[in-house]
Length: 569
Image (spheres, rainbow, N blue to C red):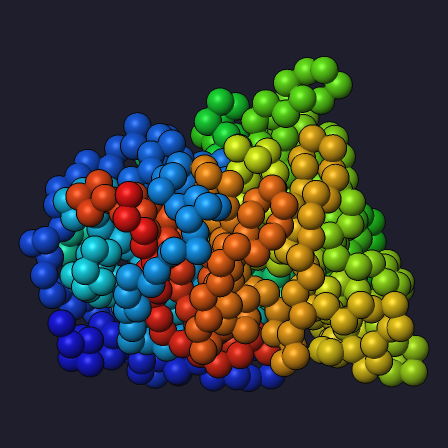
Protein backbone atom coordinates (compact mmCIF):
# COMPACT_ATOMS: atom_id res chain seq x y z
CA UNK A 1 0.00 0.00 0.00
CA UNK A 2 1.09 3.59 -0.59
CA UNK A 3 1.46 5.27 2.81
CA UNK A 4 1.62 8.64 1.07
CA UNK A 5 -2.13 8.22 0.50
CA UNK A 6 -2.79 7.02 4.06
CA UNK A 7 -4.97 9.66 5.76
CA UNK A 8 -3.89 8.59 9.25
CA UNK A 9 -0.22 8.88 8.31
CA UNK A 10 -0.84 12.28 6.77
CA UNK A 11 -2.71 13.38 9.89
CA UNK A 12 0.30 12.45 12.03
CA UNK A 13 2.62 14.32 9.66
CA UNK A 14 0.44 17.40 9.98
CA UNK A 15 0.94 17.49 13.76
CA UNK A 16 4.00 19.66 14.25
CA UNK A 17 6.13 19.36 17.36
CA UNK A 18 7.26 22.90 18.12
CA UNK A 19 9.92 23.82 20.66
CA UNK A 20 8.88 26.45 23.20
CA UNK A 21 10.56 27.79 26.33
CA UNK A 22 11.40 24.80 28.55
CA UNK A 23 9.48 22.27 26.48
CA UNK A 24 7.44 21.47 23.38
CA UNK A 25 3.90 21.91 22.12
CA UNK A 26 1.84 20.40 19.30
CA UNK A 27 0.57 22.56 16.45
CA UNK A 28 -1.74 21.59 13.60
CA UNK A 29 -3.13 18.17 12.92
CA UNK A 30 -6.66 16.82 12.45
CA UNK A 31 -9.77 18.02 14.27
CA UNK A 32 -10.80 14.39 14.82
CA UNK A 33 -8.93 11.12 15.07
CA UNK A 34 -8.34 9.30 11.78
CA UNK A 35 -8.39 5.58 10.88
CA UNK A 36 -7.21 4.33 7.49
CA UNK A 37 -7.93 0.71 6.59
CA UNK A 38 -5.88 -1.18 4.02
CA UNK A 39 -6.28 -4.97 4.25
CA UNK A 40 -7.97 -5.69 7.57
CA UNK A 41 -9.34 -9.07 6.42
CA UNK A 42 -5.82 -10.48 6.81
CA UNK A 43 -5.98 -10.10 10.61
CA UNK A 44 -6.89 -13.55 12.02
CA UNK A 45 -9.30 -13.86 14.93
CA UNK A 46 -7.33 -14.75 18.05
CA UNK A 47 -8.80 -14.50 21.53
CA UNK A 48 -6.12 -12.73 23.55
CA UNK A 49 -7.32 -13.76 27.02
CA UNK A 50 -5.78 -13.59 30.47
CA UNK A 51 -4.19 -17.00 30.09
CA UNK A 52 -2.35 -15.81 26.97
CA UNK A 53 -1.23 -12.63 28.70
CA UNK A 54 0.06 -14.49 31.75
CA UNK A 55 1.91 -16.98 29.56
CA UNK A 56 3.37 -14.64 26.95
CA UNK A 57 6.80 -14.59 28.59
CA UNK A 58 7.12 -18.35 28.02
CA UNK A 59 5.60 -18.30 24.53
CA UNK A 60 8.23 -17.74 21.82
CA UNK A 61 5.50 -16.92 19.27
CA UNK A 62 4.12 -13.88 21.08
CA UNK A 63 5.15 -10.58 22.65
CA UNK A 64 1.87 -9.34 24.10
CA UNK A 65 3.02 -6.49 26.33
CA UNK A 66 5.63 -3.78 26.48
CA UNK A 67 8.02 -5.56 28.85
CA UNK A 68 7.67 -9.00 27.24
CA UNK A 69 5.90 -10.30 30.36
CA UNK A 70 4.32 -8.89 33.51
CA UNK A 71 7.67 -9.06 35.32
CA UNK A 72 9.28 -6.76 32.69
CA UNK A 73 12.00 -9.25 31.80
CA UNK A 74 12.11 -8.24 28.12
CA UNK A 75 13.31 -11.77 27.27
CA UNK A 76 12.19 -14.07 24.47
CA UNK A 77 12.21 -17.85 24.73
CA UNK A 78 12.69 -18.09 20.95
CA UNK A 79 16.01 -19.91 20.53
CA UNK A 80 16.89 -19.90 16.83
CA UNK A 81 19.39 -17.03 17.14
CA UNK A 82 22.36 -18.03 19.30
CA UNK A 83 25.81 -16.66 20.14
CA UNK A 84 27.25 -19.17 17.68
CA UNK A 85 25.13 -18.11 14.68
CA UNK A 86 24.15 -14.49 15.38
CA UNK A 87 26.80 -13.36 12.90
CA UNK A 88 24.45 -14.72 10.20
CA UNK A 89 21.49 -12.55 11.33
CA UNK A 90 20.13 -10.67 8.33
CA UNK A 91 17.87 -7.69 7.76
CA UNK A 92 14.49 -9.03 6.54
CA UNK A 93 13.09 -5.59 5.64
CA UNK A 94 12.81 -1.95 6.61
CA UNK A 95 9.32 -0.44 6.78
CA UNK A 96 8.90 3.33 6.65
CA UNK A 97 6.09 4.13 9.09
CA UNK A 98 5.69 7.47 7.36
CA UNK A 99 5.44 9.89 10.27
CA UNK A 100 9.05 10.79 11.08
CA UNK A 101 8.52 11.70 14.73
CA UNK A 102 9.77 10.23 18.00
CA UNK A 103 10.65 6.52 17.67
CA UNK A 104 10.99 5.20 21.23
CA UNK A 105 8.38 2.43 21.11
CA UNK A 106 8.44 -1.36 21.38
CA UNK A 107 5.96 -3.21 19.12
CA UNK A 108 3.78 -6.06 20.39
CA UNK A 109 2.99 -9.23 18.40
CA UNK A 110 -0.17 -11.36 18.60
CA UNK A 111 0.48 -14.91 17.32
CA UNK A 112 -1.56 -16.23 14.40
CA UNK A 113 -1.42 -17.02 10.72
CA UNK A 114 -0.13 -14.45 10.04
CA UNK A 115 1.02 -12.94 13.33
CA UNK A 116 -0.09 -9.32 13.76
CA UNK A 117 2.18 -6.57 15.04
CA UNK A 118 0.82 -3.41 16.69
CA UNK A 119 3.39 -0.64 16.43
CA UNK A 120 3.21 2.89 17.86
CA UNK A 121 5.27 6.05 17.55
CA UNK A 122 4.83 9.78 18.10
CA UNK A 123 2.60 11.64 17.83
CA UNK A 124 -0.04 9.11 19.01
CA UNK A 125 0.12 7.00 15.89
CA UNK A 126 -0.54 3.24 15.71
CA UNK A 127 -0.39 0.66 12.94
CA UNK A 128 -1.47 -2.97 12.55
CA UNK A 129 1.21 -4.71 10.47
CA UNK A 130 1.64 -8.12 8.89
CA UNK A 131 5.21 -8.64 10.10
CA UNK A 132 5.91 -11.43 7.61
CA UNK A 133 5.54 -9.07 4.69
CA UNK A 134 6.10 -5.70 6.37
CA UNK A 135 2.71 -4.52 5.13
CA UNK A 136 0.39 -2.10 6.94
CA UNK A 137 -3.16 -3.38 7.47
CA UNK A 138 -4.58 -0.28 9.16
CA UNK A 139 -3.30 3.02 10.55
CA UNK A 140 -4.66 5.30 13.26
CA UNK A 141 -3.78 8.80 14.50
CA UNK A 142 -5.29 10.30 17.63
CA UNK A 143 -6.10 14.02 17.41
CA UNK A 144 -4.59 15.67 20.51
CA UNK A 145 -5.95 19.04 21.60
CA UNK A 146 -4.07 22.04 20.28
CA UNK A 147 -1.64 23.49 22.78
CA UNK A 148 -0.70 20.33 24.69
CA UNK A 149 2.60 21.12 26.42
CA UNK A 150 5.24 18.41 26.75
CA UNK A 151 8.53 18.46 28.60
CA UNK A 152 10.43 16.03 26.43
CA UNK A 153 9.02 15.12 22.98
CA UNK A 154 5.84 13.55 21.56
CA UNK A 155 6.84 10.01 22.56
CA UNK A 156 4.66 6.92 22.49
CA UNK A 157 6.37 3.77 23.69
CA UNK A 158 3.90 1.00 22.92
CA UNK A 159 0.50 -0.69 23.11
CA UNK A 160 -1.43 -3.14 25.26
CA UNK A 161 -3.88 -5.78 24.02
CA UNK A 162 -6.83 -7.76 25.40
CA UNK A 163 -9.48 -9.67 23.45
CA UNK A 164 -10.48 -7.74 20.36
CA UNK A 165 -9.03 -4.43 21.59
CA UNK A 166 -5.67 -2.71 21.48
CA UNK A 167 -4.84 0.28 23.71
CA UNK A 168 -2.53 3.30 23.56
CA UNK A 169 -1.87 6.26 25.85
CA UNK A 170 -2.47 9.72 24.38
CA UNK A 171 -0.38 12.84 24.86
CA UNK A 172 -3.24 14.70 26.57
CA UNK A 173 -3.09 12.27 29.51
CA UNK A 174 -5.57 9.77 28.14
CA UNK A 175 -6.08 6.19 27.01
CA UNK A 176 -7.63 5.25 23.68
CA UNK A 177 -9.08 1.80 22.90
CA UNK A 178 -9.21 0.61 19.28
CA UNK A 179 -10.82 -2.41 17.65
CA UNK A 180 -7.68 -4.35 16.81
CA UNK A 181 -9.19 -5.83 13.64
CA UNK A 182 -10.35 -2.54 12.13
CA UNK A 183 -8.44 0.26 13.89
CA UNK A 184 -11.71 2.01 14.76
CA UNK A 185 -11.91 3.90 18.04
CA UNK A 186 -14.02 2.28 20.77
CA UNK A 187 -13.51 4.67 23.67
CA UNK A 188 -11.20 7.35 25.03
CA UNK A 189 -10.75 8.17 28.71
CA UNK A 190 -9.07 11.27 30.06
CA UNK A 191 -7.16 10.46 33.25
CA UNK A 192 -6.09 14.04 34.13
CA UNK A 193 -6.18 17.63 32.87
CA UNK A 194 -3.53 18.25 30.21
CA UNK A 195 -4.02 22.02 30.58
CA UNK A 196 -2.25 21.95 33.95
CA UNK A 197 0.63 19.87 32.56
CA UNK A 198 -0.39 16.20 32.67
CA UNK A 199 0.53 14.00 29.70
CA UNK A 200 1.05 10.31 28.85
CA UNK A 201 3.71 8.60 26.71
CA UNK A 202 4.22 5.05 28.06
CA UNK A 203 2.62 1.72 27.18
CA UNK A 204 -0.24 0.68 29.50
CA UNK A 205 -0.50 -2.85 30.90
CA UNK A 206 -3.62 -5.01 31.48
CA UNK A 207 -4.30 -7.65 34.12
CA UNK A 208 -7.58 -9.39 34.99
CA UNK A 209 -9.66 -6.91 32.98
CA UNK A 210 -8.05 -3.81 34.50
CA UNK A 211 -5.82 -1.46 32.54
CA UNK A 212 -3.09 0.18 34.61
CA UNK A 213 -1.70 3.58 33.71
CA UNK A 214 0.24 6.37 35.37
CA UNK A 215 0.96 10.07 35.11
CA UNK A 216 3.51 12.38 33.52
CA UNK A 217 4.08 16.09 34.00
CA UNK A 218 6.75 16.16 36.69
CA UNK A 219 8.15 19.40 35.23
CA UNK A 220 4.78 21.16 35.58
CA UNK A 221 4.02 20.88 39.29
CA UNK A 222 1.29 18.24 38.97
CA UNK A 223 0.42 15.62 41.61
CA UNK A 224 1.42 12.14 40.45
CA UNK A 225 -1.01 9.23 40.40
CA UNK A 226 -1.51 5.65 39.25
CA UNK A 227 -4.93 4.54 38.01
CA UNK A 228 -6.81 1.35 37.22
CA UNK A 229 -9.37 1.50 34.39
CA UNK A 230 -11.97 -1.04 33.30
CA UNK A 231 -10.48 -2.35 30.05
CA UNK A 232 -13.89 -2.90 28.49
CA UNK A 233 -15.50 0.46 29.21
CA UNK A 234 -12.61 2.79 30.07
CA UNK A 235 -14.23 3.70 33.39
CA UNK A 236 -11.78 4.65 36.13
CA UNK A 237 -12.03 2.03 38.90
CA UNK A 238 -9.52 3.65 41.24
CA UNK A 239 -6.96 6.41 41.22
CA UNK A 240 -4.21 6.60 43.82
CA UNK A 241 -1.99 9.62 44.46
CA UNK A 242 1.65 8.59 44.64
CA UNK A 243 2.49 11.10 47.41
CA UNK A 244 1.31 10.10 50.89
CA UNK A 245 -0.32 13.02 52.75
CA UNK A 246 1.42 12.37 56.08
CA UNK A 247 4.88 12.38 54.46
CA UNK A 248 4.77 15.99 53.19
CA UNK A 249 5.07 19.31 54.99
CA UNK A 250 2.35 21.94 54.64
CA UNK A 251 1.14 22.60 51.11
CA UNK A 252 4.29 21.28 49.42
CA UNK A 253 2.51 18.05 48.41
CA UNK A 254 0.00 19.92 46.22
CA UNK A 255 2.60 20.46 43.49
CA UNK A 256 5.03 17.78 44.66
CA UNK A 257 4.91 15.75 41.40
CA UNK A 258 6.12 12.18 41.98
CA UNK A 259 4.71 11.08 38.64
CA UNK A 260 4.90 7.49 37.40
CA UNK A 261 5.54 7.79 33.70
CA UNK A 262 6.68 4.33 32.62
CA UNK A 263 4.85 1.00 32.46
CA UNK A 264 4.18 -0.62 35.86
CA UNK A 265 5.25 -4.18 36.69
CA UNK A 266 2.64 -6.76 37.72
CA UNK A 267 3.23 -9.32 40.48
CA UNK A 268 0.47 -11.89 39.89
CA UNK A 269 1.32 -13.97 42.98
CA UNK A 270 1.13 -11.07 45.44
CA UNK A 271 -1.62 -9.13 43.67
CA UNK A 272 0.44 -5.92 43.57
CA UNK A 273 2.11 -3.66 41.05
CA UNK A 274 5.51 -2.00 41.25
CA UNK A 275 6.05 1.39 39.67
CA UNK A 276 8.94 3.81 39.39
CA UNK A 277 8.26 7.21 40.98
CA UNK A 278 9.79 10.31 39.42
CA UNK A 279 11.20 13.58 40.77
CA UNK A 280 9.63 15.84 43.38
CA UNK A 281 8.45 19.26 42.27
CA UNK A 282 9.92 21.70 41.65
CA UNK A 283 12.85 19.73 40.28
CA UNK A 284 15.79 21.80 41.57
CA UNK A 285 14.44 24.05 44.34
CA UNK A 286 14.24 21.93 47.45
CA UNK A 287 13.65 24.89 49.78
CA UNK A 288 9.87 24.83 49.18
CA UNK A 289 9.49 21.10 49.95
CA UNK A 290 11.34 20.22 53.19
CA UNK A 291 11.86 16.60 54.18
CA UNK A 292 12.68 13.50 52.14
CA UNK A 293 9.67 13.99 49.82
CA UNK A 294 8.78 10.29 50.12
CA UNK A 295 8.38 8.25 47.91
CA UNK A 296 9.73 10.31 44.99
CA UNK A 297 12.82 9.11 43.12
CA UNK A 298 12.19 5.49 43.95
CA UNK A 299 9.79 2.57 43.82
CA UNK A 300 6.16 2.20 44.88
CA UNK A 301 4.11 -0.95 45.48
CA UNK A 302 0.31 -0.78 45.29
CA UNK A 303 -2.52 -3.32 45.58
CA UNK A 304 -3.84 -4.27 42.13
CA UNK A 305 -7.52 -4.25 43.09
CA UNK A 306 -7.73 -1.10 45.20
CA UNK A 307 -4.58 0.95 44.59
CA UNK A 308 -3.88 0.81 48.33
CA UNK A 309 -0.30 1.69 49.30
CA UNK A 310 1.88 -1.29 50.13
CA UNK A 311 5.46 0.01 50.40
CA UNK A 312 7.87 2.56 48.99
CA UNK A 313 11.62 2.94 48.61
CA UNK A 314 13.73 6.00 47.71
CA UNK A 315 17.08 6.02 45.92
CA UNK A 316 17.48 9.83 46.13
CA UNK A 317 15.55 11.38 49.07
CA UNK A 318 14.87 15.14 48.90
CA UNK A 319 16.21 15.12 45.39
CA UNK A 320 17.43 18.37 43.79
CA UNK A 321 19.37 16.79 40.89
CA UNK A 322 16.40 15.46 38.86
CA UNK A 323 17.40 11.89 39.74
CA UNK A 324 13.88 10.56 39.26
CA UNK A 325 13.26 6.84 39.00
CA UNK A 326 11.71 6.24 35.59
CA UNK A 327 12.73 2.88 34.12
CA UNK A 328 10.29 -0.04 34.63
CA UNK A 329 10.96 -2.14 37.71
CA UNK A 330 12.08 -5.73 37.04
CA UNK A 331 10.66 -8.55 39.19
CA UNK A 332 13.31 -11.27 39.58
CA UNK A 333 12.00 -14.46 41.19
CA UNK A 334 13.74 -17.03 43.36
CA UNK A 335 16.98 -15.25 44.14
CA UNK A 336 19.00 -16.90 46.90
CA UNK A 337 19.39 -14.44 49.76
CA UNK A 338 21.00 -15.69 52.97
CA UNK A 339 20.17 -19.27 52.10
CA UNK A 340 16.52 -18.58 51.25
CA UNK A 341 14.71 -18.09 47.96
CA UNK A 342 13.50 -14.49 47.68
CA UNK A 343 11.75 -12.45 44.99
CA UNK A 344 13.48 -9.15 44.31
CA UNK A 345 12.26 -5.94 42.69
CA UNK A 346 15.13 -4.41 40.71
CA UNK A 347 15.19 -0.67 40.16
CA UNK A 348 17.80 0.85 37.88
CA UNK A 349 17.68 4.57 38.61
CA UNK A 350 19.16 7.89 37.54
CA UNK A 351 21.42 7.96 40.59
CA UNK A 352 23.76 5.58 38.79
CA UNK A 353 23.29 2.37 40.77
CA UNK A 354 20.89 -0.57 40.61
CA UNK A 355 18.77 -1.28 43.70
CA UNK A 356 17.50 -4.73 44.67
CA UNK A 357 14.47 -4.62 46.99
CA UNK A 358 12.57 -7.40 48.74
CA UNK A 359 9.30 -7.81 46.83
CA UNK A 360 7.32 -8.44 50.00
CA UNK A 361 8.58 -5.62 52.20
CA UNK A 362 10.47 -3.18 49.96
CA UNK A 363 13.53 -3.53 52.19
CA UNK A 364 16.78 -2.90 50.36
CA UNK A 365 18.65 -6.17 49.78
CA UNK A 366 21.61 -4.74 47.91
CA UNK A 367 22.81 -1.71 46.00
CA UNK A 368 24.94 -2.64 43.01
CA UNK A 369 28.44 -1.57 42.23
CA UNK A 370 28.38 1.70 40.34
CA UNK A 371 27.31 1.51 36.70
CA UNK A 372 28.34 4.99 35.57
CA UNK A 373 30.91 7.25 37.17
CA UNK A 374 30.01 9.27 40.27
CA UNK A 375 31.74 12.64 40.26
CA UNK A 376 30.73 15.44 42.65
CA UNK A 377 27.75 13.28 43.54
CA UNK A 378 25.21 14.88 45.91
CA UNK A 379 26.99 18.27 45.80
CA UNK A 380 24.57 21.05 46.71
CA UNK A 381 23.75 23.05 43.60
CA UNK A 382 24.11 26.85 43.73
CA UNK A 383 21.39 29.47 43.72
CA UNK A 384 21.64 31.06 40.22
CA UNK A 385 25.37 31.88 40.44
CA UNK A 386 27.34 30.75 37.39
CA UNK A 387 30.62 31.06 39.28
CA UNK A 388 29.59 28.46 41.87
CA UNK A 389 28.28 25.76 39.55
CA UNK A 390 29.78 22.30 39.94
CA UNK A 391 29.83 19.80 37.07
CA UNK A 392 28.52 16.45 38.24
CA UNK A 393 28.18 12.90 36.90
CA UNK A 394 25.69 11.47 36.31
CA UNK A 395 23.89 14.57 35.08
CA UNK A 396 20.14 15.08 35.16
CA UNK A 397 19.42 12.48 32.40
CA UNK A 398 20.86 9.83 34.73
CA UNK A 399 22.10 7.10 35.21
CA UNK A 400 19.16 5.14 33.94
CA UNK A 401 16.40 7.38 32.56
CA UNK A 402 13.30 5.71 31.02
CA UNK A 403 15.28 2.98 29.21
CA UNK A 404 13.93 -0.44 30.29
CA UNK A 405 16.45 -3.00 31.56
CA UNK A 406 16.14 -6.66 30.62
CA UNK A 407 16.60 -9.77 32.77
CA UNK A 408 17.73 -13.11 31.43
CA UNK A 409 16.75 -16.14 33.55
CA UNK A 410 19.39 -18.20 31.73
CA UNK A 411 22.32 -15.96 32.71
CA UNK A 412 20.71 -14.69 35.92
CA UNK A 413 21.79 -11.15 35.02
CA UNK A 414 20.02 -7.80 34.65
CA UNK A 415 21.20 -5.58 31.77
CA UNK A 416 21.06 -1.81 32.29
CA UNK A 417 21.92 1.42 30.48
CA UNK A 418 23.31 4.38 32.44
CA UNK A 419 24.29 7.78 31.08
CA UNK A 420 27.67 9.14 32.10
CA UNK A 421 27.62 12.77 31.01
CA UNK A 422 28.60 15.87 33.03
CA UNK A 423 26.05 18.64 33.59
CA UNK A 424 25.71 21.46 36.08
CA UNK A 425 22.62 23.02 37.66
CA UNK A 426 21.35 26.04 39.48
CA UNK A 427 18.22 26.61 41.53
CA UNK A 428 15.99 29.64 41.85
CA UNK A 429 12.64 30.36 43.42
CA UNK A 430 9.70 30.15 40.99
CA UNK A 431 6.00 30.69 41.60
CA UNK A 432 3.79 27.81 40.51
CA UNK A 433 1.80 28.74 37.38
CA UNK A 434 -0.64 26.06 36.20
CA UNK A 435 0.26 24.60 32.82
CA UNK A 436 3.73 26.13 32.77
CA UNK A 437 7.10 24.57 33.64
CA UNK A 438 7.89 24.41 37.35
CA UNK A 439 11.58 23.51 37.36
CA UNK A 440 12.79 25.79 40.14
CA UNK A 441 16.04 26.28 38.24
CA UNK A 442 17.77 25.05 35.13
CA UNK A 443 20.72 23.03 33.87
CA UNK A 444 23.64 23.40 31.50
CA UNK A 445 23.90 20.56 29.02
CA UNK A 446 26.73 19.88 28.63
CA UNK A 447 28.41 21.24 31.74
CA UNK A 448 30.24 24.53 31.35
CA UNK A 449 33.42 22.66 32.35
CA UNK A 450 34.11 18.92 32.33
CA UNK A 451 35.64 17.44 35.49
CA UNK A 452 39.15 16.01 35.11
CA UNK A 453 37.98 12.66 36.48
CA UNK A 454 35.43 12.12 33.67
CA UNK A 455 36.50 9.22 31.45
CA UNK A 456 35.02 10.66 28.24
CA UNK A 457 32.47 7.86 27.77
CA UNK A 458 28.91 9.09 27.37
CA UNK A 459 27.01 5.90 28.35
CA UNK A 460 27.63 2.58 30.09
CA UNK A 461 25.83 -0.66 29.19
CA UNK A 462 26.32 -3.20 31.96
CA UNK A 463 25.30 -6.57 33.38
CA UNK A 464 24.47 -6.82 37.09
CA UNK A 465 24.01 -9.89 39.29
CA UNK A 466 20.84 -9.13 41.31
CA UNK A 467 21.83 -11.58 44.05
CA UNK A 468 25.08 -9.82 44.91
CA UNK A 469 25.01 -6.44 43.19
CA UNK A 470 28.20 -7.34 41.31
CA UNK A 471 28.74 -5.51 38.03
CA UNK A 472 29.68 -8.53 35.91
CA UNK A 473 30.70 -6.57 32.82
CA UNK A 474 30.43 -3.07 31.41
CA UNK A 475 30.71 -1.67 27.88
CA UNK A 476 31.58 2.03 27.80
CA UNK A 477 29.87 3.80 24.88
CA UNK A 478 31.83 6.68 23.39
CA UNK A 479 30.26 9.12 20.98
CA UNK A 480 32.11 11.78 19.09
CA UNK A 481 28.88 13.71 18.47
CA UNK A 482 27.57 13.54 22.05
CA UNK A 483 24.63 11.16 21.53
CA UNK A 484 23.61 8.99 24.47
CA UNK A 485 22.61 5.36 24.19
CA UNK A 486 18.89 6.04 24.60
CA UNK A 487 16.91 2.79 24.18
CA UNK A 488 16.35 -0.34 26.26
CA UNK A 489 17.60 -3.89 25.76
CA UNK A 490 16.30 -7.33 24.76
CA UNK A 491 17.55 -10.66 26.14
CA UNK A 492 17.17 -14.11 24.57
CA UNK A 493 16.96 -17.62 26.00
CA UNK A 494 20.20 -18.41 24.20
CA UNK A 495 22.14 -15.80 26.16
CA UNK A 496 22.20 -12.87 23.74
CA UNK A 497 21.45 -9.23 24.58
CA UNK A 498 20.43 -6.75 21.87
CA UNK A 499 20.65 -2.98 22.11
CA UNK A 500 21.08 0.03 19.84
CA UNK A 501 23.16 3.20 20.02
CA UNK A 502 22.53 6.79 19.08
CA UNK A 503 25.17 6.36 16.40
CA UNK A 504 22.79 3.96 14.65
CA UNK A 505 24.59 0.74 15.62
CA UNK A 506 22.37 -2.24 16.49
CA UNK A 507 24.45 -4.62 18.62
CA UNK A 508 24.16 -8.23 19.78
CA UNK A 509 26.18 -8.89 22.94
CA UNK A 510 27.18 -12.13 24.57
CA UNK A 511 25.17 -11.84 27.77
CA UNK A 512 27.74 -13.71 29.85
CA UNK A 513 30.89 -11.88 28.79
CA UNK A 514 29.72 -8.58 27.27
CA UNK A 515 31.56 -9.30 24.02
CA UNK A 516 30.07 -7.72 20.90
CA UNK A 517 29.17 -10.58 18.57
CA UNK A 518 27.31 -8.79 15.74
CA UNK A 519 26.54 -5.25 14.60
CA UNK A 520 24.34 -3.63 11.97
CA UNK A 521 24.67 0.06 11.13
CA UNK A 522 21.84 2.49 10.30
CA UNK A 523 22.28 6.11 9.26
CA UNK A 524 20.05 7.53 12.03
CA UNK A 525 19.96 6.92 15.80
CA UNK A 526 18.26 4.03 17.57
CA UNK A 527 16.25 5.38 20.52
CA UNK A 528 13.91 2.41 21.00
CA UNK A 529 13.89 -0.96 22.77
CA UNK A 530 13.92 -4.13 20.61
CA UNK A 531 11.70 -7.22 20.84
CA UNK A 532 11.55 -10.69 19.28
CA UNK A 533 9.22 -13.56 18.33
CA UNK A 534 9.20 -16.88 16.49
CA UNK A 535 6.86 -17.48 13.53
CA UNK A 536 6.17 -21.22 13.03
CA UNK A 537 4.54 -20.53 9.65
CA UNK A 538 7.81 -19.09 8.32
CA UNK A 539 10.07 -21.15 10.63
CA UNK A 540 11.99 -18.01 11.51
CA UNK A 541 12.91 -16.01 14.58
CA UNK A 542 12.50 -12.26 14.12
CA UNK A 543 14.02 -9.30 15.98
CA UNK A 544 12.42 -5.89 15.50
CA UNK A 545 13.59 -2.42 16.51
CA UNK A 546 12.37 1.07 15.68
CA UNK A 547 15.04 3.31 14.17
CA UNK A 548 14.95 7.08 14.47
CA UNK A 549 15.91 9.80 16.89
CA UNK A 550 14.17 11.20 19.92
CA UNK A 551 14.11 14.97 19.96
CA UNK A 552 15.13 15.61 23.56
CA UNK A 553 18.70 16.28 24.70
CA UNK A 554 20.62 16.11 21.46
CA UNK A 555 19.27 12.78 20.31
CA UNK A 556 20.12 13.29 16.66
CA UNK A 557 18.12 13.34 13.42
CA UNK A 558 14.61 11.98 13.13
CA UNK A 559 13.77 8.79 11.30
CA UNK A 560 10.71 6.65 10.61
CA UNK A 561 11.97 3.09 10.18
CA UNK A 562 10.78 -0.19 11.62
CA UNK A 563 13.68 -2.61 11.04
CA UNK A 564 13.00 -6.35 11.17
CA UNK A 565 15.80 -8.94 11.23
CA UNK A 566 15.33 -12.70 10.84
CA UNK A 567 16.99 -16.08 10.92
CA UNK A 568 15.71 -19.39 9.56
CA UNK A 569 15.17 -22.24 11.98
